[in-house]
Length: 140
Image 1 (cartoon, helix red, strand yellow):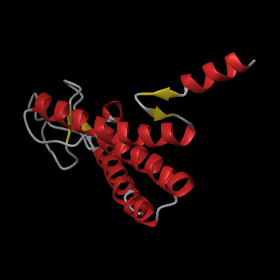
Image 2: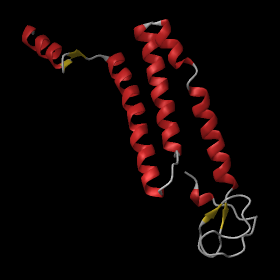
Image 3: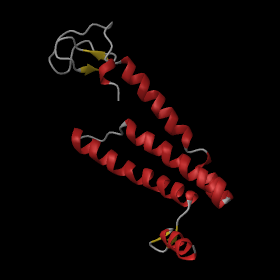
Image 4: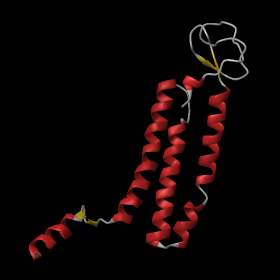
């Protein structure tokens, strides 16, 4: 039995770090924040203009919640807690704004391209847009 217990303890060690639930939550938060960089970079390269996709805000929200939980329940450090206590507010606000923009887009009936809410003509094919058709298929 001692041999088995020793194997379990050594399995909890990786890269000189003692792993447990809160350590995993903290690292998941760091991973989510790191992935934001690649998501934003990919979206910018794809469109050839600076854009911040909704996935950036979702990763920001998840990362901040994991790190806030880690700070509150494991570290119990007031500086660390305060650093993440309010970061979720702009992330949620940006997700709400993005959803409103997506819902307000108009779909071109000819080429099925999503156009901005105030557009009168399709930016892709030039056809006149009907304001009653929503671009629900284009939600991010």
